Image (spheres, helix red, strand yellow):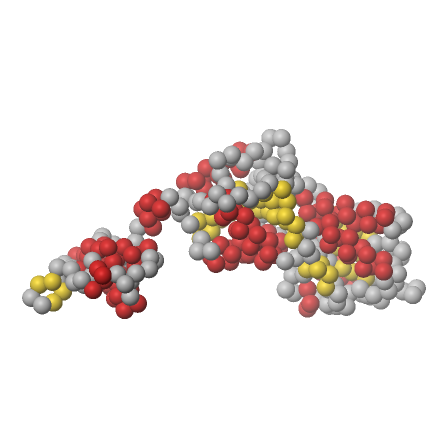
Length: 358
């Protein structure tokens, strides 16, 4: 037990001397809190920093004094003293996609569990200058490490290099030979989607892919094509969207007019949603006429009409591994370069079935 937490400070006439009236402001000091709480400044410091050795009764007494005086501990000064800020910076190039938003949420939750805050810095244009500027701004904001959510091809470009002195983990990139990367098993999930549809008896599987330049979209499209070739099926022409439901709807209007299209693997659930609408408008029933499978397993996927068969991404695990790896770097415990893949899981619902002829 802290022997100082029972020692009254500045006692006069048998009672505690309250701080002057003017101290009840943003200028209140640690000494003011100590006088009001009747403890030493050392005890106030221990409470502020979350150290042990202070009784619960004394801790509550100090916290009450802090509240009354409006005292706020100087977190920046504490951080400089400890040599850490307990903050992780996150750079992301898009907040418009479900994958990025859910990954960010998972990172924030995992960081909070470890006692770290998250500072977000969106970057509009993924260029070398923007990346360099983002790191400079994060350093000014005092972060211990950075997680980069990089859904587009960038780190594999010769013109892009992250600062060597910054502890970095990258999400969703093709740069595992240069950085520590955490990603969903895009290829494994896509192969599972194709196998599921072929096993139902479909002659081939059409693919509604994501935007050109997206790492995830390329991985999913490459695996779709490879899985069909391995099964001795001819891959149909790739139909491309931009991750949005509207692009899925536009692509669906084209696919709905093709009688030979009985199965579609959409690269994400939003495009699958637009596809379902287009097929319905054109009189193509799902799954009786066309089977549809998505990727992500967003919370609403089970409420689509019909409920969507899809590949479940474990965003929570991706976020946990990102934080775990970047903190290993911060603590000098080592985090190897290379890519860690988080498995997907096929969730079969009511949007897939055997083709009409079976």
